[in-house]
Image (tube, rainbow, N blue to C red; front, side, top):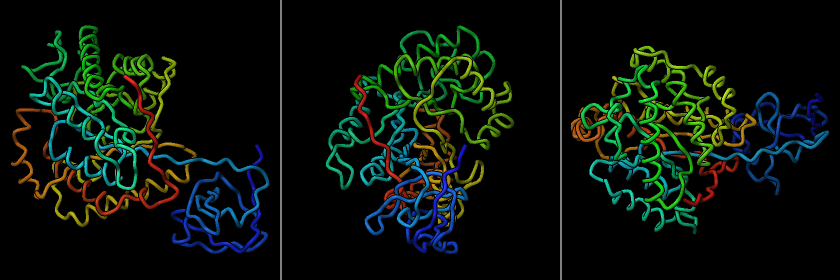
Length: 400
């Protein structure tokens, strides 16, 4: 296949990190230089042209100085920035509300089994918030600009289903994900999980007056065995609800689960899940590449310096965004874990939120200092807010 070539028509600087004249420079290209072009993206407006070429060596050059030998494919880059675990912890929700208003995120993944919220009054207040406020600088209501997803859980809190889901419970609460074993492949377990998913789905629609914009599962539980994976795929297609792709589950998280936490089963690899998906003939929509772990310290280590953690997180975001820009992916997702609070020390956070261990087991409060760091990271700077090469993904409101 013939490679796309371009000839430099004006002396032009090569940019290393971003398609902008403010980015770091590589040696300039003289007139007549032949370059190999991968694709075109939107970048900083310069001399009334905002299209930049991504070269095969993963650098950026302003398209106004390059004459391509054939049409260069243009890729509109769209981001889904999702705040996870919404609907249970007030300070997590407050962090997400502030982030939505200021355009730091455009997506939330919602639990619908908040303790004591059987009728969904608390979640209805979330719905009212989305319908009442706009993103700063945008005239549309957040309900129209926010991806609102169902964060399905069978590993935290109590069930929503009024039917028999006793196989999934330890007392009145769901069994922890660390108790996951081969029993969950049995038909009796799978049928109860299906019933619980349907119950949480119906509650979501009743509260938010529309279908979820995406389906995710707490602790990635729906990727733990073939029967659950199959049902997730089939349910997604039947209900026309996009899934967060399994293909980019963080290897560090999977290693942690497989070797240190969930010892009773061998979790499927990405390759195995790819094979299952091909066998089912399934089609996963939406994000193509996802950060889904707390990209700060892993337990049991506490945050010692928030300054250094925020710097680390900003660096990881920059690396990830660069990889997105030089790829040919149209859409990717970042999943973050936000907590807005004045508390900083891990032991103070654990003490303050200790009631969750009994009221909503399954959300690990030892991670909360990492959530604080992620909130501070986005507060310090959300690169997609000022980067013309990136845009938050638009929302198509999905009728219930």
